[in-house]
Length: 442
Image 1 (tube, one colour):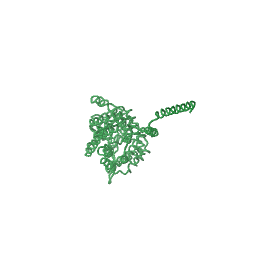
Image 2 (spheres, helix red, strand yellow):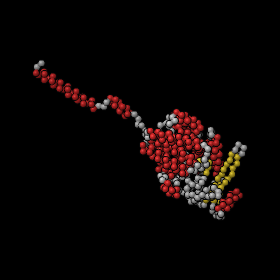
Image 3 (spheres, helix red, strand yellow):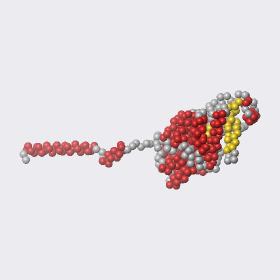
Image 4 (cartoon, rainbow, N blue to C red):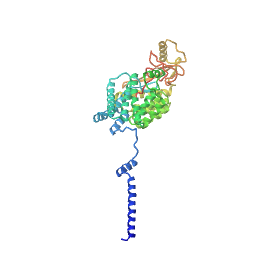
């Protein structure tokens, strides 16, 4: 080969070697094929939503049974989950929730024009209920000892919330405060681990709302007892997050918020719009039907209220005790609507009251030891009793109040509770003992 040919070959070799080096540098910049595949898959995958607790289908079925007003059908499902996963809190949570709704229904009655589970004494079944909530809390705490997750903090906090419900119903305010503070701590930690955990936000909303409804005296005592404060406005927002985004607390948060807006804020329209989706999703639940009828009646929409009460009256409730209570309440509301349509409601001048009302007025004057002025008005509550053999109605004194005082305006001047002879004055919406509830029943 000539010298000229040799130079051409060497030049070609150098060119080829340069191309190889460039190609090698290019491939080094490319990711590993397996890594590239995973990266591509992640880019195509839909984003994972944080803050949602994942439930198996059988748990969702149990919750639907509970809120469709058949908690007895949900209990076997919950127990099957307990047997399959005895160390997981979910089954115990569902069983306690089912038992609570049975207890809530049997405790419901009409006071101050509202259907609500008012205060009751201890019941034999409470011990079983609290035993199940203890198992739920213990299971969650055992999981947390092994590995901390926001989900298990939510389960632990909801166990304390379930205990607070029964203590509130029994008017055990110290126990309510004790478990309420523990539940609050669990939910705060859950939100530290996962700020998007909507169920934790809902339970915090319950605490913040109801602690802010305490009287000024109790709020002052709260400082000495080390009970954290709350804020109603924040509580409403947190409950709204829970009812719209929560998994375990979606129904409870909506039900609690609707009742709170009715009872403490008298925001009946907002309460109605909050509660209406419950009636749409669970149209055969008489508890939801009674609440919707009650709210429409508060707004003066009797024509809308009546169908809800009639639907509740016709509802097929598997629990016989609950069914009897639902029929009694629905019948009372319907009777009240018909009386309202023909008689000017509830405020009767004592001077013009019939004999039974005049007698009641005299009894009140005797108990008070003073002569009531003519401007005082006497409010009456109509009670109906129904049995297979007979049905009768009678009127009893409900609230004695002065002008501007109302049994539906918690912030109006003090008025007397309906209990004789010990009248209790309060500037907040009274429960049967004249003091505001610390936590809701649901």
